[in-house]
Image 1 (spheres, rainbow, N blue to C red):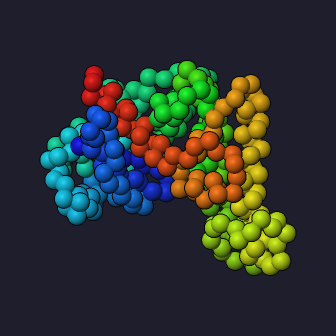
Image 2: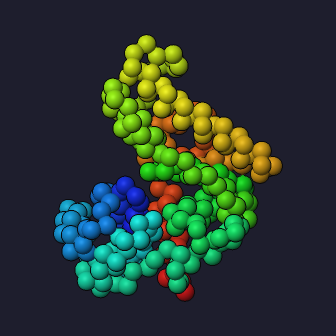
Image 3: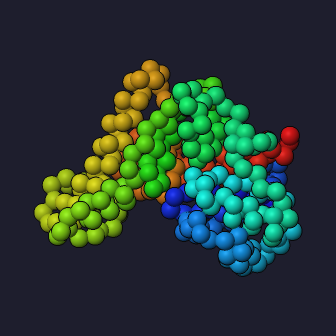
Length: 264
């Protein structure tokens, strides 16, 4: 089995992949824990071993561990987890045998976050043609991948929860609200909470639609939009912008890199 670990700014996602009858990998289980760079390898192990036991999986069944991280301080403790509790050398996305092996067509390729590179790899493997990948995380990123699989650049915008935090944190009387599906399509609110939800939610939809339209115009060819991240499903209910919603895009990209590394 493969253990894939995606370390984001807000959460760390662990996914256990098993081989399927067709020879590919499918996700057998996934778990999420809050990102904390101070969390030790021993703390990860106590939490993870219990979850593996609940699933009836022995640690000896895990033959490979791969990680992608945008939090460099968390990497050492993940390495300790792999070495001390699985007796495995950690495979790191973008390094050594797990090199991305894609063209990064920007002036400083090293500036590309590993999550975005892994998304590009998975998107090109799963969907044909020019692509725009939208990842709804702590920040929302929009990335352009051409039909050859080359990363061409993208956009970084504040995540919707960051936007809401800034709004509430810098005003005296506005209440904290939950990001949820609007009850209707009204864009003229009649109370404070509705007006806030309209501004944040529909404002975010308008931003995405506007940015994608501008990206498509610059690309100059039809480009499919692939959405991933926790809020992709919610937004998909209120816009026809997405050609595909793929919650496991990053994890699938890690599985692809792990297979390439194993083959080398």
